[in-house]
Image (tube, rainbow, N blue to C red; front, side, top):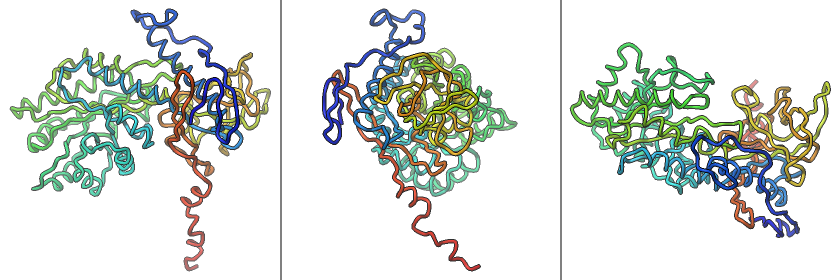
Length: 492
């Protein structure tokens, strides 16, 4: 499906005209010091931010013209294909800058961040693999055509059946704890295994600004706690006793974790790998899985920190990591996708309460779950568009942006200054490409929205359906609709 910037035919044969696209209003973030100027004196970072905003504005207008959003489709997810490809290419280039030539590097996308098969296939086309944490995520990676050799399984609660399947496929497995390692011992005993096998370590370097996402605290549920009494000696012995155990894994990063703290965690497992290899008298540890979790700036279209920032911070903190002696695995998710997704929701009604304007939309906790329940940690930018998909202008008025869920706190923004929204307008939730419309919260049995990818050319906007909207029949079916009498049939 394509939308011309001049004239064209929408679905159903309806004619429309779309004005030439314009640069987005407003200014980008300040340029990084020393960055080379781009068009009109803008830095490359500002150019990228402006390009993201311009493509988004064109896609919103085209989505309205195509009928992808409107009275019959009041909420939709949009994914910027060019932006996703650019982020994947930027990640590869960032680590190529700092690694020795010939170093094996696998960038395994964290599937939980966008569990959509076409997204995984797009990233695979850009040279990325998949990091999975459940049988469902493994099935999605395989459906996307990602080969087992480019998949890493990291779940903290792997069953015997999950481990057996992963080993049979040749998927890399990082054991989380001593009991899981004992299970793997039994599964690999006397049988050749092609899966690379590793052990997750919690370096216990501390948390960040969001406690629930801090994976390297002293009491984190993940990995073997490195600083606990006797743990380091146990880890060394575990590797010395198992020649097939060749990887160390740590995942310190997540939203709210500064890159410097992430780098400290990586340094801890690097030093542990050096110690194990010295004790073994050979390169027993061949690969370090350094996780992902680079934070995202939710305040503007400007991407910072970047993957390049982090790669260079790692090189400063752990220079030996990149000298070619260790293969590397990364597990980035949010930082690759967040900036390239938009939730577009129709304003169904507007009203006021105690003088505060409220716009009631079709996007709330079912999509922006974290934002609704933890707004201080997960604030989202909101952009206002009119019913025809054009950016709204006018005096900014503080207003609440409410969702459709049946509880009072279903607000994605409180007192947000925006041009005053009216019924039929569109509220765009920005930076929602990761963890939002791909991880649905089925409150009130609200259906999952359709998700479309878009690609802007100089003359048109092309759309591809990533996931169709969930139907009411599907909601009923997954809620036991084929067995309404199951409970009443039980004897009294």
